[in-house]
Length: 385
Image (cartoon, rainbow, N blue to C red; front, side, top):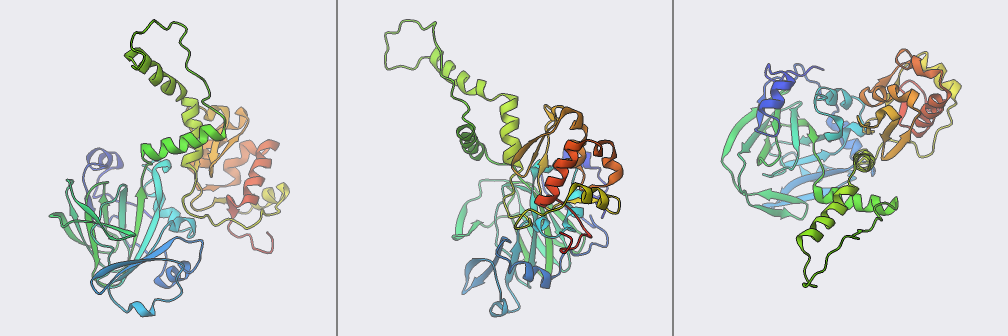
């Protein structure tokens, strides 16, 4: 799968459009093939581990329901939409779509959302707080996108936040292979013209509020940040009820001194690699041996589980630090060079891993990850597991 951004290089796109203005990308994917069929999507939405919802209007009122679902017959043939989050956690082919946008780092990736809609279907006019590339699969959809502004939002349903009517700066029809890029804050509304599928690659960051709340939990769990303010040079005051500018500086310094690169990377590595949706992991750890891992590597590559988040930081990767699925792993410094391979590549073959396979510690750790389901062999049958 290859991406063509209207002839723009990724660098040009980032400079001219990323988080600045929306863009219609005609035939961004030539000969685009749906990553999943409507029937397969309906089957996926039956799984209680899969986050799904459907949106429709009833008697002029918006309705939203959350899965799992086992029937759609009562919805008829028009005006409803089925949405499944984190398709990349369940359908390996979604990885190829994500790779097309890897000029944006994976720590910014949210997920791949898939939407199936019947004619007239949509979720209503709304504003998202993330960047999204809406990739049109089979069928056609009309999209209207408005400009930034003080748009009023309201709850059309407890699960649906809509925005007031807006004047479009984009009013277009997407055909298979077309892409619509929408930055945060731009109101938009999509209405299906014929039965269709669309695949949205979303990128978001957490709010400062959410990050600070999670950081407080991290400090408490790790028993960090217990240092008290020291002020042996305190001067006499005649205003006992006042926090003067010197004390305000002490308070600010207490907080900012705590936010070292080490602490921020330690917390962020764990926080950013947590998956918001369930992963397709085994119920119990597998029982694969190191010798079996080596033997299977002779025949096929290891594939990273869809949706698994793996990150490293420039400041400590040389020390062997890597973060995977909310956990910190400390490899030896001599294994540090394998970390970018783990995090930047979807597949690990024996040739690429060869320089490190002689290290017992790496083979032990790699086998542990395989048994956890983080990496897997595609052709390995359930019986062998």
